[in-house]
Length: 328
Image (cartoon, rainbow, N blue to C red; front, side, top):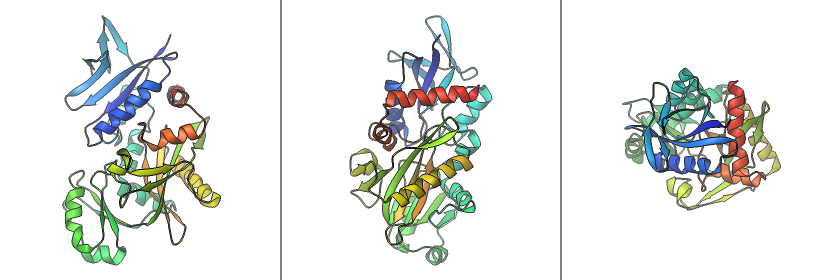
């Protein structure tokens, strides 16, 4: 009998539309020979299975829905919800309590990695090279003296818990900080002011196979704008080159660091770790860890999968099978 798999998409954040694109890509590429696959929309007004364009409410007490007089129960879920609640640990915690296997990491690891400021501090303690930063707690104003003492301009001001570059600003002078912090707080009340590492941006995709972390071909990102912002990511305003045009030595260091991060943080499923190779020193700095990375046709991981010689159907199907086997 086929396993019943739901593809979770949507969410409650600014990344809603991107999540729908990611989820739809997964939905269209999962093996229907192996699985009965349903789209599951996670919305603020409710959670719904979408069948033939009809939305059927999910009973959150059991995570089931009724279809043609039958109760449909899921054997596993593919998590493509970016932002809250799918990337910050809330949905993972619910699924853990319900005992339903899913393709993303566990609740604690999701909450940690989604908070860029706190995650990078943990990684620094493990010896991972991350960009220097100043963390602003809720309600805390930018301390100009502290920031100018610790960091060199330009800096990047970011919401600590958001994705797809929403709320991110490149700041050239201290006088621009207040407006940038206010903009970041439109996404999250916790804000990072991060040293502007200027150089080549590289995305590194990874997944687990037979207990080993597998590194996908690296992607070099060349944005047309000041940085890899939303328009560069999703409106074609960047050039993405896979494999990245970097030395074997740097590529090896990024791959080694990504494996280390994946293992130290006990991650699962598909992960993308982003770096910037500083142009004067040639050293790669880890920027952030994405535990529910974009999977839309314009996203980086699907490009890397194809470069590795895999079809998206085989790749996504493997990720589901792996998550089911881990649960057993």
